Every structure is written in structure tokens, then in C-alpha cells.
Length: 423
Figure 1 (cartoon, rainbow, N blue to C red):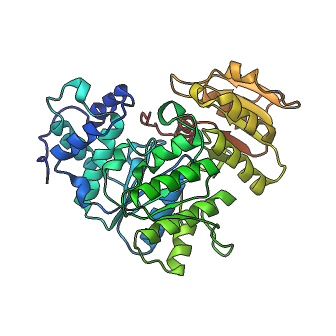
Figure 2 (cartoon, rainbow, N blue to C red):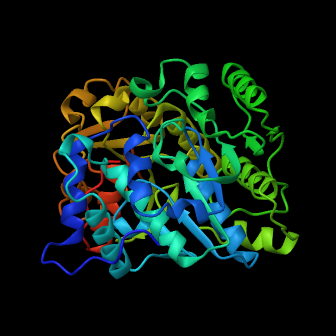
Figure 3 (cartoon, rainbow, N blue to C red):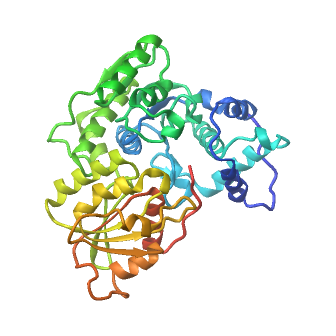
């Protein structure tokens, strides 16, 4: 299949791959299609469930992997970005792909693109997607669950064949790439539809749903709208009432793809799912810590709703950091009312919002506000060792605002080191 295995070289494969992050986002499928052709088109052997949308994509994919695995199917899962380890992006049968296989796969990518002019080289996300397709094809899996990276129509994952498609709730995000209205964004998401291939969607705002229906009708796509969450007797492993809707969308997707599910495997699969950074509860140095990568307004509102469902009126210590291009002041205005104390930190990215600027946007009374340069300094203040009078009481801690921040937090807690991530 495709290119032969590469000869060993002295260069770290991840270093070669990471250099591609400098190419940024370049819309279009031409580079991806060319790369896959050189690799021998590994995607053609895959049987995929494809998930697009603004929020909830990762949760739906995680639910799907867990339910299908509980039902006895061999599975591949491709998601992005990673939080701590690169291997989080590519899973086979519920486990991160071995780093040696990743290295071999990157070697094949390097060989496939040897001699390409820099202006024609694939982007980082395209390379990683091709890597996933290659590894999945070699594993000969029953089904692969794919999460789109950005949009859908021009996303690198859209080169794969599909058994069924799902659209999670659509909101305003990545407007510089996808358009500034819900219907424009919905049309980009609907770009994953294929003629005659069934699709399912979560409930949507009217403009988004109309655009999805129009796209489906034009292509001859059977489109089903999920109308109710999973029943109360089912207990998803992810917190929040919105996750019951995500679970219902997952089951509709799997069944649309032609897979048989029993009540027992559904219950076990939904209950057994784990998805870091989505209202993830931990204990750290004796304090309860909730980590959630609520990085857009829709997600921040869902986080507030879930906090109220789980904690009622109980206040938290909020650790918040966000990217400057994600309207951080709007995110903070949603989350600050949950807090008795707020620590504003820089995100480990050149795109970070300035904590001092964010501090001036908080208008709520009776909230102590601190600006701290690094997350490790905030952890020292919040979890002990560097406390000063007036610092946070010993209640729950909520960390939110950016997936970059989530990854850094999980790395700090584990004592490890995160690998670079931009897409």
C-alpha cells in the first residue's frame, strides 16, 4: 500500500511534523488529495462516521467510540486538537496509537512529500489527518469516527468516504474562515454531506437548520433531526444536560451508519466514556477542580448551565485565560458570576489575551480579581504554597477559557510536559 516504509534517519519525526505548524491554515483540498494519492489512498478502505459542528463534536465522537467499542466493533477515533500528548488525536480500539507507529507513519509522510516546493506542502492538520488515515487503514478497522477540524467543506477530513454524518449544535465561531452568520457557517458544516449518505443533526437555530435542510435536499441526503435527549434511565459518563443531547445524536449517527446496538451496549458505552477537558472533575492538592475548555460563547453558556446543574448557587474560584481572537471579555462576562474570586492568566500562546486588559472588563461586585502571568503561579496561589490574605477560600476551582489552558493545566497536574498544538 502506498509508499514503502522509510529508511531510519536521525531527525525526530515529531520535529519534522511540528515545523509544519508554521504554514498555518490554508483552505482547500488539493494538497490533501495529492498527498493521499502518493500514499496510495489509504482513506478509501475506511468506513467513517463523520462529525461536524461548532460545539460538542469531541463529545459525540468520544461517545461514538465508546458505544461502538462496547458493541464489539473495532474502532478508530480521530480528534483535534490534543491537550497534552500528540497521540491523543489518533486512537485505535480506545487506546492512543503507539508512538513508534506514529514515528513510522510520519516517516512515510516525509518520504511522500520529498521534493515538494514549500508553497505546495501540506499544512500541519493535513499531514496529521493523512497520518491518521494511513494508520487506520493499516489496522483494518470496522469503523472510524472522524471529527472535523474547521468547518467541513474544505476540511482535510472531508476527503474520507462516510457511512453517515452528524452535525452538532452550530454557533458563531471561526467566523473569519466560515462566515459571520449562522446560515453561512451551517452551509460550510453541511459540506461534509454526500449524495444518498444519511445525516443527522442536533436541534439548531432556525437559520442554521434551514441551511442544513436546503443543503441536504440539494444533494439528496436523508436528514434526521434529533428531537429529544436520551431518557433518564440512561446515564452518560459526561456531566451536563447538553451531554444527553450529544448522546442522543451519537446513537442516531451510529444507527444511520448501519450498526446494530443493544440497550446493554448503549448503556455501557455511554456510561463508560471519558473525555478530558469537558467538565472534567479532579482533586488537586485537596481541592475539587473542574476543567472545561469553554473557548467560545456557546460553550461558555453551556458551562454555566452545567455548573448550575451540578453545584447550584455554590461559588467557585475561577482561573481564566483565553486567546485574544476568541472575544475573551464576552466569555469572562458569562463565567465571572459563578466566581467569588478570579485569577486571570496568560495562555501559553502568542495569541493570548492580556490578563490586565481582561481585569478591567469585570464589573461584578464582590469578586476579588487577581492578574497572574503564568498558570503555574496561579496554581501556587490557589492550591497552596503561595497563598496571601484574601486569596481564594477552600471551595471548588473552575479552570476555563481555552483548550491551550486546559492542556497546560493537565500537564502541570500530571507533572509532564505538553507537546505543541495549534490546530
